[in-house]
Length: 113
Length: 113
Image (cartoon, rainbow over all chains, first blue to last red):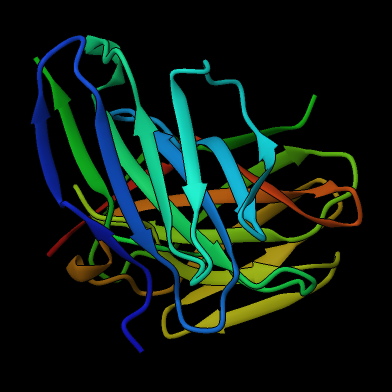
């Protein structure tokens, strides 16, 4: 079992550009959540996807959008990048309908210059 | 408002010196309290989930306990390899299903040989 995998691991983008991050959930998991973690802070919830729809959303602007595919994998898109978007972006997967653990990927380190 | 507070922010221990990390929370409809270990630049590594007051779980030198207001992560005879940031999170209730995780800022543990 490969666990939760994210790509790429590191990314450098210029302010104003757009970026797409990818996540494959743990085998048997159908729910994917995305989190943003600034340096020295705990992860902050961006949104959650289930059955290819956004089910819940945190306090993030519309520049942050996502998608879930039929195989449960997911993408996070960020438009019009700001310097403040620099962070570690984490994907977590879980199995809906159960009180189960949430497992995280290794994260994507995004640097906006 | 749902909230998680961890203390202390940083903790320095000598190898073999046992101690505890605290996580206090306020949440409507707790659907699980999670402990994660996070190494620098990596994604959080799942340690424990606790669901009800009085529950305890152990893993090697770590033991997690839960009350109605807080959780403790006890570290017995720590080793240098236990050095990491320990994150506490609560899962919220969302429409009868799993809500997002709300994280504390973490406790940075350093264990000196």
